[in-house]
Image (cartoon, rainbow, N blue to C red):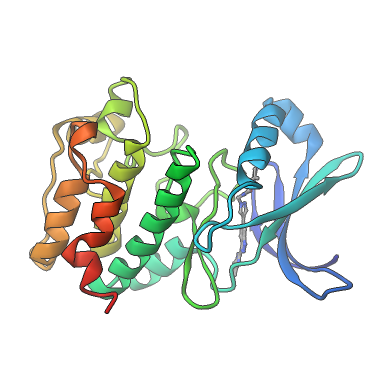
Amino acid sequence: FDIGKPLGRGKFGNVYLAREKNSKYIVALKVLFKSQLQKAGVEHQLRREIEIQSHLRHTNILRLYGYFYDSTRVYLILEFAAKGELYKELQKVQKFNEERASNYIKQITEALRYCHTKHVIHRDIKPENLLVGIKGDVKIADFGWSVHAPTSRRTTLCGTLDYLPPEMVEGRDHDATVDIWSLGVLTYEFLVGSPPFEAKGHSETYRRIAKVDLKFPSYVSAEARDLISKLLVKEPKNRIKLDDVLKHPWIARFSQ
Ligand code: N15
């Protein structure tokens, strides 16, 4: 590989723009230091993540093409997403219009539906974990074990509660429907610019999630409110199904 500019910095190493010398294929090359992985005790987790990720093939899930290593580092060959990080774009424009938000949510729903058929859950779908491809297509990139550079906002010592469903903040059992909840939080954040249960401290966020204390600014359309209200349902089994999200008027309306 020829190595180019850094694309991101993280706890265990950095991500670089890179080009495979023979094919000239552009990728994102992630370099992890074995010493740091060992120190944090996450080698096993990395192996597991690589195993899961390498079996997933979907246009809206960032591809892991392969990996290699030397005595000190592990290299992950990842898909390059030409338009970069979605949270930065959201920060820049504050909130997305309903057509753009609907389009992104449709793509993420399709990616989650694919994951769920493979029994892969909890893709941690907050804006910080989404990248944008050349055609404006959204890609779920798994920053799950925080190898990603810390983002300016909402990165506290213990992370954010904002995307966790009631059953997880209350320490109960959870299943694939946690992703449905996160999809609701994401839809809200796309349209409003901040997550629905945001609060000053963890205990207040916790309280708002457990109560499903949901309020909409006046500019959010009736159809968007209807979908968000069907995603953000306290009882996991009563949340709308991913197939029905795709049939919902707020999704169907914008995809001509
Ligand atoms: C354990 C492993 C199998 C999981 C694989 N996924 C990750 O490690 C998550 N991850 C993805 N960590 C870093 C990245 C990453 C991939 C970061 C940035 C990019 C990336 N692909 N493309 C980019 C990218 N494109 C950009 C364009 C403009 C500005 C910044 C950009 N970053």
